[in-house]
Length: 444
Image 1 (cartoon, rainbow, N blue to C red):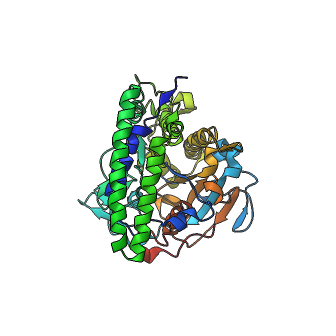
Image 2: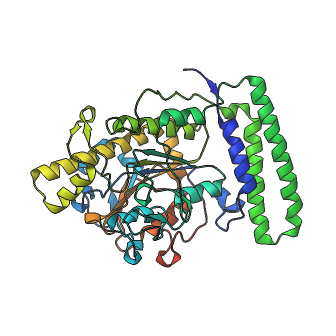
Image 3: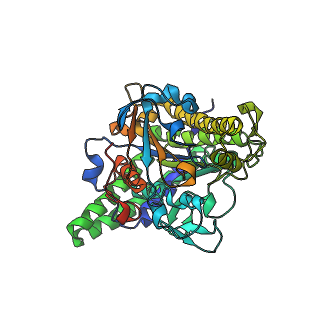
Protein backbone atom coordinates (compact mmCIF):
# COMPACT_ATOMS: atom_id res chain seq x y z
CA UNK A 1 0.00 0.00 0.00
CA UNK A 2 1.33 3.41 -0.93
CA UNK A 3 1.81 5.81 1.98
CA UNK A 4 0.41 9.27 1.34
CA UNK A 5 0.73 12.50 3.22
CA UNK A 6 -2.80 12.96 4.48
CA UNK A 7 -4.98 15.67 3.05
CA UNK A 8 -5.60 16.60 6.67
CA UNK A 9 -3.17 19.39 5.82
CA UNK A 10 -5.54 20.51 3.13
CA UNK A 11 -8.65 20.11 5.22
CA UNK A 12 -7.16 21.80 8.24
CA UNK A 13 -7.38 24.84 6.02
CA UNK A 14 -11.13 24.34 5.98
CA UNK A 15 -11.12 23.70 9.70
CA UNK A 16 -9.14 26.89 10.23
CA UNK A 17 -11.77 28.75 8.28
CA UNK A 18 -14.43 27.14 10.44
CA UNK A 19 -12.62 28.25 13.59
CA UNK A 20 -12.44 31.79 12.28
CA UNK A 21 -16.02 32.05 11.12
CA UNK A 22 -17.87 29.87 13.65
CA UNK A 23 -20.18 32.10 15.69
CA UNK A 24 -20.25 31.93 19.47
CA UNK A 25 -23.19 29.55 19.47
CA UNK A 26 -24.91 28.87 22.76
CA UNK A 27 -24.61 25.16 22.06
CA UNK A 28 -20.82 25.17 22.11
CA UNK A 29 -19.41 23.06 24.87
CA UNK A 30 -16.96 24.65 27.28
CA UNK A 31 -13.55 23.21 28.06
CA UNK A 32 -14.69 21.83 31.40
CA UNK A 33 -17.57 19.93 29.80
CA UNK A 34 -15.43 18.57 26.98
CA UNK A 35 -12.78 17.35 29.38
CA UNK A 36 -15.11 15.75 31.94
CA UNK A 37 -13.67 12.26 32.58
CA UNK A 38 -13.14 11.61 28.85
CA UNK A 39 -16.33 9.56 28.60
CA UNK A 40 -17.61 10.80 25.28
CA UNK A 41 -17.56 9.75 21.65
CA UNK A 42 -14.81 11.08 19.43
CA UNK A 43 -16.78 10.67 16.20
CA UNK A 44 -20.39 10.60 15.02
CA UNK A 45 -21.59 8.50 12.09
CA UNK A 46 -25.20 8.50 10.82
CA UNK A 47 -26.44 5.60 8.67
CA UNK A 48 -29.88 6.10 7.05
CA UNK A 49 -32.00 3.53 5.20
CA UNK A 50 -35.46 4.10 3.66
CA UNK A 51 -39.01 3.29 4.76
CA UNK A 52 -39.77 1.65 8.10
CA UNK A 53 -38.02 -1.41 9.62
CA UNK A 54 -41.05 -3.60 8.83
CA UNK A 55 -42.93 -3.90 12.16
CA UNK A 56 -42.30 -4.57 15.82
CA UNK A 57 -42.62 -8.33 15.57
CA UNK A 58 -39.69 -8.30 13.15
CA UNK A 59 -37.34 -5.93 14.98
CA UNK A 60 -37.96 -6.70 18.67
CA UNK A 61 -35.33 -9.16 19.93
CA UNK A 62 -36.10 -12.07 22.23
CA UNK A 63 -36.37 -11.01 25.86
CA UNK A 64 -38.81 -9.80 28.49
CA UNK A 65 -39.44 -6.40 30.00
CA UNK A 66 -38.57 -2.94 28.79
CA UNK A 67 -34.82 -3.50 29.13
CA UNK A 68 -32.79 -6.66 28.69
CA UNK A 69 -29.47 -7.94 27.42
CA UNK A 70 -29.22 -8.94 23.79
CA UNK A 71 -28.82 -12.70 23.73
CA UNK A 72 -29.80 -12.91 20.07
CA UNK A 73 -30.95 -10.68 17.23
CA UNK A 74 -34.03 -10.86 15.00
CA UNK A 75 -33.56 -12.92 11.84
CA UNK A 76 -33.38 -9.94 9.49
CA UNK A 77 -30.45 -8.59 11.57
CA UNK A 78 -28.46 -11.81 11.40
CA UNK A 79 -25.62 -10.03 9.60
CA UNK A 80 -25.13 -7.92 12.73
CA UNK A 81 -24.66 -10.93 15.02
CA UNK A 82 -20.85 -10.46 15.24
CA UNK A 83 -21.56 -6.96 16.58
CA UNK A 84 -24.41 -7.85 18.94
CA UNK A 85 -22.44 -6.56 21.93
CA UNK A 86 -21.74 -3.30 20.08
CA UNK A 87 -25.45 -2.48 19.68
CA UNK A 88 -28.06 -0.63 21.70
CA UNK A 89 -31.49 -1.18 20.16
CA UNK A 90 -33.96 1.58 21.07
CA UNK A 91 -37.54 0.57 20.43
CA UNK A 92 -40.94 2.29 20.51
CA UNK A 93 -39.80 5.91 20.29
CA UNK A 94 -42.30 8.36 18.82
CA UNK A 95 -41.76 11.07 16.24
CA UNK A 96 -43.97 13.62 18.00
CA UNK A 97 -43.17 16.25 15.42
CA UNK A 98 -45.46 14.28 13.10
CA UNK A 99 -48.39 15.04 15.43
CA UNK A 100 -48.06 18.78 14.81
CA UNK A 101 -46.96 18.63 11.17
CA UNK A 102 -49.37 20.33 8.75
CA UNK A 103 -47.64 19.53 5.45
CA UNK A 104 -47.25 16.43 3.34
CA UNK A 105 -47.87 12.75 3.87
CA UNK A 106 -46.02 10.11 5.88
CA UNK A 107 -42.66 10.53 4.23
CA UNK A 108 -42.42 14.11 5.46
CA UNK A 109 -40.78 12.52 8.52
CA UNK A 110 -37.44 12.52 6.73
CA UNK A 111 -37.34 16.28 7.29
CA UNK A 112 -37.98 15.71 11.01
CA UNK A 113 -35.56 12.84 11.46
CA UNK A 114 -32.30 14.59 12.35
CA UNK A 115 -33.71 18.07 12.98
CA UNK A 116 -36.49 17.35 15.49
CA UNK A 117 -38.69 19.98 13.82
CA UNK A 118 -41.59 20.21 11.40
CA UNK A 119 -40.81 21.16 7.83
CA UNK A 120 -40.91 24.39 5.83
CA UNK A 121 -42.97 23.95 2.62
CA UNK A 122 -41.98 25.69 -0.60
CA UNK A 123 -44.91 24.24 -2.57
CA UNK A 124 -48.01 22.11 -2.18
CA UNK A 125 -46.59 18.76 -3.24
CA UNK A 126 -45.77 16.11 -0.63
CA UNK A 127 -42.04 16.40 -1.34
CA UNK A 128 -41.95 20.18 -1.72
CA UNK A 129 -40.44 21.06 1.62
CA UNK A 130 -37.14 21.54 3.41
CA UNK A 131 -36.42 20.98 7.07
CA UNK A 132 -36.88 24.00 9.32
CA UNK A 133 -33.72 23.67 11.40
CA UNK A 134 -30.20 22.32 11.64
CA UNK A 135 -29.70 18.55 11.74
CA UNK A 136 -27.88 16.90 14.63
CA UNK A 137 -24.91 15.82 12.50
CA UNK A 138 -24.26 19.37 11.31
CA UNK A 139 -24.85 20.74 14.81
CA UNK A 140 -22.21 18.41 16.27
CA UNK A 141 -19.80 19.18 13.44
CA UNK A 142 -20.16 22.93 14.00
CA UNK A 143 -19.58 22.54 17.72
CA UNK A 144 -16.42 20.51 17.09
CA UNK A 145 -15.16 22.92 14.43
CA UNK A 146 -15.11 20.40 11.57
CA UNK A 147 -16.89 20.02 8.26
CA UNK A 148 -19.29 17.07 8.22
CA UNK A 149 -18.83 14.57 5.40
CA UNK A 150 -22.27 13.98 3.85
CA UNK A 151 -22.49 10.98 1.52
CA UNK A 152 -25.34 9.34 -0.35
CA UNK A 153 -26.12 6.33 -2.53
CA UNK A 154 -28.84 7.15 -5.06
CA UNK A 155 -30.49 9.78 -2.82
CA UNK A 156 -32.90 10.76 -5.61
CA UNK A 157 -34.09 14.19 -6.61
CA UNK A 158 -33.52 17.58 -5.06
CA UNK A 159 -36.41 17.93 -2.64
CA UNK A 160 -37.27 17.34 0.98
CA UNK A 161 -37.90 13.61 0.53
CA UNK A 162 -34.29 13.20 -0.56
CA UNK A 163 -32.29 15.00 2.15
CA UNK A 164 -31.49 14.19 5.78
CA UNK A 165 -28.76 16.72 6.58
CA UNK A 166 -29.25 20.49 7.05
CA UNK A 167 -27.00 23.36 8.13
CA UNK A 168 -30.10 25.37 9.07
CA UNK A 169 -33.70 26.07 8.12
CA UNK A 170 -34.18 25.62 4.36
CA UNK A 171 -30.48 24.82 3.99
CA UNK A 172 -30.18 21.19 2.84
CA UNK A 173 -26.80 19.57 2.43
CA UNK A 174 -26.69 17.74 -0.87
CA UNK A 175 -24.86 14.43 -0.38
CA UNK A 176 -21.85 13.47 -2.44
CA UNK A 177 -22.81 10.44 -4.50
CA UNK A 178 -19.62 9.38 -6.29
CA UNK A 179 -17.05 7.85 -3.95
CA UNK A 180 -14.24 7.97 -6.52
CA UNK A 181 -14.63 11.71 -7.12
CA UNK A 182 -15.06 12.40 -3.40
CA UNK A 183 -11.90 10.44 -2.64
CA UNK A 184 -9.97 12.61 -5.10
CA UNK A 185 -11.30 15.79 -3.48
CA UNK A 186 -10.56 14.60 0.07
CA UNK A 187 -7.11 13.22 -0.61
CA UNK A 188 -6.29 15.44 -3.58
CA UNK A 189 -3.11 16.97 -2.16
CA UNK A 190 -1.62 13.61 -1.17
CA UNK A 191 0.91 13.88 -3.99
CA UNK A 192 2.03 17.46 -3.37
CA UNK A 193 5.83 17.80 -3.20
CA UNK A 194 7.26 18.07 0.30
CA UNK A 195 8.33 21.70 -0.16
CA UNK A 196 4.83 22.74 -1.22
CA UNK A 197 3.31 20.95 1.76
CA UNK A 198 5.78 22.67 4.10
CA UNK A 199 4.95 26.07 2.64
CA UNK A 200 1.23 25.37 2.93
CA UNK A 201 1.63 24.38 6.58
CA UNK A 202 3.68 27.51 7.31
CA UNK A 203 1.00 29.76 5.83
CA UNK A 204 -1.70 28.12 7.91
CA UNK A 205 0.34 28.37 11.08
CA UNK A 206 0.84 32.05 10.39
CA UNK A 207 -2.91 32.54 10.03
CA UNK A 208 -3.54 30.66 13.28
CA UNK A 209 -0.99 32.81 15.12
CA UNK A 210 -2.86 35.94 14.07
CA UNK A 211 -6.20 34.41 15.03
CA UNK A 212 -4.89 33.47 18.48
CA UNK A 213 -3.65 37.00 19.07
CA UNK A 214 -6.96 38.52 17.98
CA UNK A 215 -8.99 36.20 20.22
CA UNK A 216 -6.77 36.74 23.25
CA UNK A 217 -7.04 40.51 22.89
CA UNK A 218 -10.84 40.19 23.10
CA UNK A 219 -10.88 38.10 26.27
CA UNK A 220 -10.49 40.84 28.94
CA UNK A 221 -13.50 42.70 27.56
CA UNK A 222 -15.92 39.75 27.71
CA UNK A 223 -18.23 38.58 30.54
CA UNK A 224 -17.64 35.20 32.14
CA UNK A 225 -19.92 33.07 29.94
CA UNK A 226 -18.55 34.60 26.77
CA UNK A 227 -15.02 33.97 28.02
CA UNK A 228 -15.82 30.26 28.33
CA UNK A 229 -16.92 30.21 24.71
CA UNK A 230 -13.86 32.18 23.66
CA UNK A 231 -11.68 29.70 25.54
CA UNK A 232 -13.30 26.92 23.53
CA UNK A 233 -12.23 28.66 20.33
CA UNK A 234 -8.72 29.22 21.63
CA UNK A 235 -8.47 25.55 22.53
CA UNK A 236 -9.66 24.62 19.06
CA UNK A 237 -7.03 26.88 17.47
CA UNK A 238 -4.29 25.43 19.66
CA UNK A 239 -5.41 21.93 18.68
CA UNK A 240 -5.20 22.86 15.01
CA UNK A 241 -1.72 24.30 15.52
CA UNK A 242 -0.57 21.10 17.19
CA UNK A 243 -1.93 18.96 14.37
CA UNK A 244 -0.23 21.12 11.77
CA UNK A 245 3.09 20.90 13.58
CA UNK A 246 2.92 17.16 14.23
CA UNK A 247 3.91 15.33 11.05
CA UNK A 248 3.17 11.94 12.58
CA UNK A 249 -0.43 12.97 13.21
CA UNK A 250 -0.87 13.88 9.56
CA UNK A 251 -0.08 10.61 7.82
CA UNK A 252 -2.46 7.84 6.85
CA UNK A 253 -2.74 5.17 4.22
CA UNK A 254 -5.83 5.81 2.09
CA UNK A 255 -6.76 3.25 -0.53
CA UNK A 256 -8.03 4.95 -3.71
CA UNK A 257 -11.64 4.30 -4.74
CA UNK A 258 -11.88 2.84 -8.23
CA UNK A 259 -13.54 4.78 -11.01
CA UNK A 260 -15.08 3.39 -14.18
CA UNK A 261 -18.35 2.52 -12.42
CA UNK A 262 -21.69 4.25 -12.81
CA UNK A 263 -22.07 4.83 -9.10
CA UNK A 264 -25.36 6.66 -9.64
CA UNK A 265 -27.01 3.67 -11.33
CA UNK A 266 -29.49 1.26 -9.78
CA UNK A 267 -27.39 -1.74 -10.82
CA UNK A 268 -24.31 -0.46 -8.95
CA UNK A 269 -26.18 0.41 -5.73
CA UNK A 270 -24.67 -2.36 -3.51
CA UNK A 271 -21.18 -1.51 -4.74
CA UNK A 272 -21.80 2.20 -4.23
CA UNK A 273 -22.88 1.67 -0.63
CA UNK A 274 -19.78 -0.37 0.20
CA UNK A 275 -17.43 2.09 -1.51
CA UNK A 276 -19.04 5.01 0.31
CA UNK A 277 -18.47 3.16 3.58
CA UNK A 278 -14.84 2.55 2.61
CA UNK A 279 -14.42 6.24 1.83
CA UNK A 280 -16.13 7.38 5.04
CA UNK A 281 -14.04 5.16 7.31
CA UNK A 282 -10.81 6.30 5.64
CA UNK A 283 -11.80 9.95 6.07
CA UNK A 284 -12.50 9.34 9.76
CA UNK A 285 -9.35 7.32 10.28
CA UNK A 286 -7.20 9.98 8.59
CA UNK A 287 -8.71 12.69 10.78
CA UNK A 288 -10.27 14.62 7.92
CA UNK A 289 -13.51 14.91 9.88
CA UNK A 290 -15.16 13.68 13.08
CA UNK A 291 -18.71 13.63 11.69
CA UNK A 292 -20.08 11.75 8.68
CA UNK A 293 -23.39 10.49 7.35
CA UNK A 294 -24.40 8.00 4.68
CA UNK A 295 -27.89 8.21 3.19
CA UNK A 296 -29.07 5.09 1.37
CA UNK A 297 -31.66 6.16 -1.22
CA UNK A 298 -34.38 8.53 -0.01
CA UNK A 299 -37.49 8.51 2.16
CA UNK A 300 -39.44 5.89 0.21
CA UNK A 301 -36.83 4.60 -2.28
CA UNK A 302 -39.37 4.60 -5.09
CA UNK A 303 -36.60 4.77 -7.69
CA UNK A 304 -34.55 1.95 -6.17
CA UNK A 305 -35.23 -1.56 -7.48
CA UNK A 306 -33.41 -4.53 -5.90
CA UNK A 307 -32.17 -6.22 -9.05
CA UNK A 308 -28.86 -7.19 -7.45
CA UNK A 309 -28.15 -10.88 -8.03
CA UNK A 310 -24.68 -10.53 -6.48
CA UNK A 311 -26.45 -9.59 -3.24
CA UNK A 312 -28.99 -12.41 -3.59
CA UNK A 313 -31.82 -10.04 -4.57
CA UNK A 314 -33.73 -10.23 -7.85
CA UNK A 315 -36.99 -8.44 -7.00
CA UNK A 316 -38.52 -6.67 -9.97
CA UNK A 317 -40.37 -4.12 -7.81
CA UNK A 318 -39.16 -0.82 -6.41
CA UNK A 319 -38.46 -0.66 -2.66
CA UNK A 320 -41.40 1.62 -1.93
CA UNK A 321 -43.85 -0.76 -3.60
CA UNK A 322 -42.35 -3.67 -1.68
CA UNK A 323 -42.94 -1.79 1.59
CA UNK A 324 -46.54 -0.87 0.75
CA UNK A 325 -47.40 -4.32 -0.58
CA UNK A 326 -46.34 -5.80 2.76
CA UNK A 327 -48.40 -3.28 4.74
CA UNK A 328 -51.51 -3.79 2.62
CA UNK A 329 -51.51 -7.54 1.94
CA UNK A 330 -49.33 -9.83 4.02
CA UNK A 331 -48.87 -13.11 2.25
CA UNK A 332 -45.88 -15.40 1.82
CA UNK A 333 -44.58 -13.45 -1.17
CA UNK A 334 -44.89 -9.94 0.24
CA UNK A 335 -43.42 -11.01 3.58
CA UNK A 336 -40.44 -12.69 1.95
CA UNK A 337 -39.69 -9.68 -0.25
CA UNK A 338 -39.89 -7.30 2.67
CA UNK A 339 -37.65 -9.43 4.88
CA UNK A 340 -35.09 -9.85 2.11
CA UNK A 341 -34.95 -6.11 1.54
CA UNK A 342 -34.41 -5.17 5.18
CA UNK A 343 -31.85 -7.96 5.56
CA UNK A 344 -29.93 -6.37 2.69
CA UNK A 345 -29.89 -2.98 4.44
CA UNK A 346 -28.84 -4.47 7.79
CA UNK A 347 -26.06 -6.43 6.08
CA UNK A 348 -24.64 -3.17 4.76
CA UNK A 349 -24.91 -1.59 8.20
CA UNK A 350 -22.86 -4.55 9.42
CA UNK A 351 -20.33 -3.77 6.68
CA UNK A 352 -19.94 -0.28 8.18
CA UNK A 353 -19.45 -1.65 11.71
CA UNK A 354 -16.94 -4.21 10.39
CA UNK A 355 -14.96 -1.41 8.74
CA UNK A 356 -14.92 0.75 11.88
CA UNK A 357 -13.94 -2.22 14.03
CA UNK A 358 -11.08 -3.09 11.67
CA UNK A 359 -9.27 0.21 12.37
CA UNK A 360 -7.02 -0.14 15.44
CA UNK A 361 -7.00 2.76 17.85
CA UNK A 362 -5.24 3.35 21.15
CA UNK A 363 -2.40 1.54 22.88
CA UNK A 364 -4.52 -1.28 24.32
CA UNK A 365 -5.77 -2.99 21.19
CA UNK A 366 -8.86 -0.81 20.89
CA UNK A 367 -10.95 -0.27 17.77
CA UNK A 368 -12.11 2.94 16.17
CA UNK A 369 -15.64 1.62 16.68
CA UNK A 370 -15.09 1.77 20.45
CA UNK A 371 -14.62 5.55 20.42
CA UNK A 372 -17.31 6.24 17.81
CA UNK A 373 -21.06 6.78 18.12
CA UNK A 374 -23.04 5.33 15.21
CA UNK A 375 -26.71 6.17 14.72
CA UNK A 376 -28.76 3.85 12.49
CA UNK A 377 -32.08 5.45 11.61
CA UNK A 378 -35.17 5.43 9.43
CA UNK A 379 -37.70 8.19 9.00
CA UNK A 380 -40.81 6.08 9.51
CA UNK A 381 -42.37 3.92 12.19
CA UNK A 382 -45.02 1.23 11.96
CA UNK A 383 -47.09 1.35 8.75
CA UNK A 384 -45.51 4.66 7.65
CA UNK A 385 -46.46 6.46 10.88
CA UNK A 386 -44.37 8.09 13.59
CA UNK A 387 -45.11 5.33 16.13
CA UNK A 388 -43.22 2.20 17.20
CA UNK A 389 -40.00 3.53 15.73
CA UNK A 390 -36.71 1.68 15.96
CA UNK A 391 -33.33 3.37 16.27
CA UNK A 392 -29.97 1.74 16.86
CA UNK A 393 -26.92 3.21 18.55
CA UNK A 394 -23.70 1.34 17.95
CA UNK A 395 -20.10 1.65 19.08
CA UNK A 396 -18.71 2.36 22.51
CA UNK A 397 -18.94 6.18 22.30
CA UNK A 398 -15.65 6.37 24.17
CA UNK A 399 -17.05 4.41 27.10
CA UNK A 400 -20.15 6.56 27.50
CA UNK A 401 -22.58 4.00 26.07
CA UNK A 402 -23.59 0.64 27.53
CA UNK A 403 -24.27 -1.59 24.55
CA UNK A 404 -25.41 -5.18 24.11
CA UNK A 405 -28.93 -4.23 25.19
CA UNK A 406 -32.49 -3.60 24.05
CA UNK A 407 -34.39 -0.70 25.62
CA UNK A 408 -38.07 0.05 24.97
CA UNK A 409 -39.03 3.70 25.48
CA UNK A 410 -42.75 4.07 24.64
CA UNK A 411 -44.00 7.63 24.77
CA UNK A 412 -40.55 9.21 24.54
CA UNK A 413 -39.94 11.61 21.69
CA UNK A 414 -37.26 11.02 19.12
CA UNK A 415 -36.14 14.58 19.94
CA UNK A 416 -34.84 13.16 23.20
CA UNK A 417 -32.70 10.71 21.24
CA UNK A 418 -31.16 13.67 19.40
CA UNK A 419 -30.43 15.27 22.79
CA UNK A 420 -28.75 12.02 23.85
CA UNK A 421 -26.62 12.02 20.70
CA UNK A 422 -25.44 15.55 21.49
CA UNK A 423 -24.56 14.64 25.08
CA UNK A 424 -22.77 11.44 24.06
CA UNK A 425 -20.67 13.65 21.78
CA UNK A 426 -19.75 15.83 24.76
CA UNK A 427 -22.15 18.71 24.09
CA UNK A 428 -24.25 20.16 26.93
CA UNK A 429 -27.55 20.40 25.01
CA UNK A 430 -30.69 19.66 27.03
CA UNK A 431 -33.05 20.16 24.08
CA UNK A 432 -32.74 19.68 20.36
CA UNK A 433 -35.12 20.77 17.64
CA UNK A 434 -38.49 21.81 18.96
CA UNK A 435 -37.91 22.40 22.71
CA UNK A 436 -41.60 21.82 23.46
CA UNK A 437 -41.17 18.18 22.45
CA UNK A 438 -38.10 17.54 24.58
CA UNK A 439 -38.02 15.91 28.00
CA UNK A 440 -34.25 15.61 28.16
CA UNK A 441 -31.76 12.89 27.31
CA UNK A 442 -33.00 9.31 27.25
CA UNK A 443 -32.16 7.01 30.20
CA UNK A 444 -29.56 4.97 28.38
